[in-house]
Length: 234
Image (cartoon, rainbow, N blue to C red):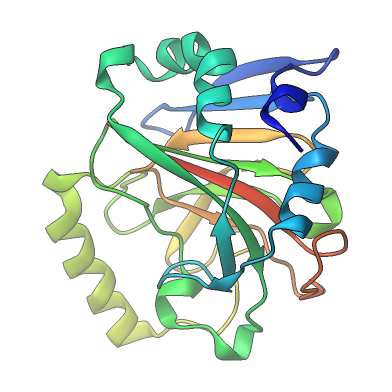
């Protein structure tokens, strides 16, 4: 895939904006995002350099195409600014990463068994562009039952972690992926995976991938849960 072949929206491009939960956090859902999304899989295969991911992500990651973020701002910029009440000058940078879920439940760390936020900066954004279909599970947003928090910013971070850590110590956490509500979190919104769908939310929103008990941990770009995740810093 080249920059020229990618810089075009799909002929059936569409989007919607939702405000979820009690705290009405915005979510942008784009369907049929880009023309030649298949080319993003080919790019991944031609530049294979996956490595074990950070603490939160239960699998492997590699850098996405350098032009991908610029393409996103070119075509989705105004929609993003409207959805999340931002201005162009708020954007300081970002990065995009191919990602594949590969860690079996028994090998998960506790932190990977729970919803998380990617940043405590209220303006930062995160999104997942699905390069797989609905069989591989989507993404859900959550509310922490004890605090009622649906997002965790700098002001909430200390109280949230104090409460959560106490709950983990007293109640424990099953070695399993989130895939709906449990004793600590309520699922407040869920978006199925669909090829060439993009879901964007504030990085402070508590979220997790939907990884069911019958999930196949396939380390293959065309048979596994391949996504292109983008983090926008403000």
